[in-house]
Length: 118
Figure 1: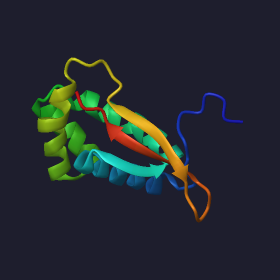
Figure 2: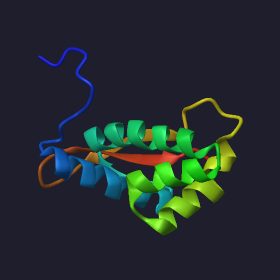
Figure 3: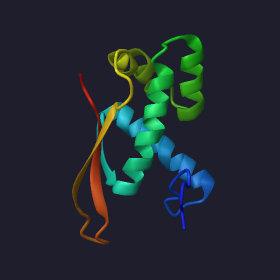
Figure 4: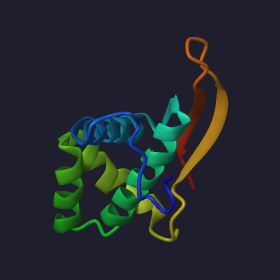
């Protein structure tokens, strides 16, 4: 049983899971809306919201902390300078997950995850 278990394993090893979340986070920062499976979207929501909260400060330490998680200069710059300042007056809830369809090949539930624009 998974009572109060802290995260979804997504059928991957820990290093593969970290790489998957990092790549999904970079994609959502660049595109602001992506389609993925529902469990990945729910896990990404927690990951990216913590990152945006950290980036909202906008100082050098926030920049370094976000870069340590993303390892992508372009995405880090966009998150700290363009995306995070939009959410300064918002206390969480920066993303939205919308269920869309079942994937034809394996009937996996797909969902859009998008950044909420204000």
